[in-house]
Image (tube, rainbow, N blue to C red):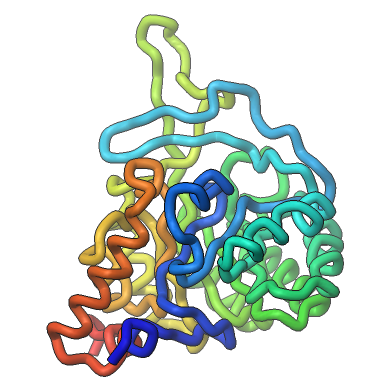
Length: 304
């Protein structure tokens, strides 16, 4: 059996070569010069808003124990630029693209989804209701079941594509939010986005990041993410995409066994641009060695 067969997966109608996806905001065009992006399950470019945004004041990134903090603030050039410049680039590179949209109001999400409605060659839309680095919008939407549901329903209304809702872990009960977006028509959920964190410069006696706090990603958050994926997937009928500190094939397998139908990889690509390719080959090796017919059989194995 070729690699294509055993790793091929269909998530909410999205046909992917394998279940390894480049996470939004972590995988820019420069990676296409370093690896063959056509080998990835999908690429989710940086979240776009309807209009351009400048983002947060620097510094925006700092390393921390077993991870990093970022506070980019959704800087992007807007949806038109994405459609005219970003999409053709990824298309030419042979990547399967899932668009990520964000906004400060339901109307902004709706307009972004509307703009994408006529665009060919997008496999799905991920709604980022979980960015912790903007003062309004994202994080409130992701923290309240009713608001998360409202955004989901509005985007579903505009889109014929599968809609993935990206959930924030910075809530009391992530299962409640997940159930609300499922009821509102989400085709899939992805989790977790970053955990809020901070570093302080003891010489300057002030936080290192320009905005004070930022989103923590990397291996440090993996156990938290894994538990949330496990809990959410046992409570939903729709597929779950897991992320949070995945750097190796073993990490990816843990997430799939916890119930994730696919995984997203972010911070690991900063450390090693080939991280996702290594995860893909490690997955293939594990599936073959353990005599599974398909990678899909791993999903939820730890919950059986």
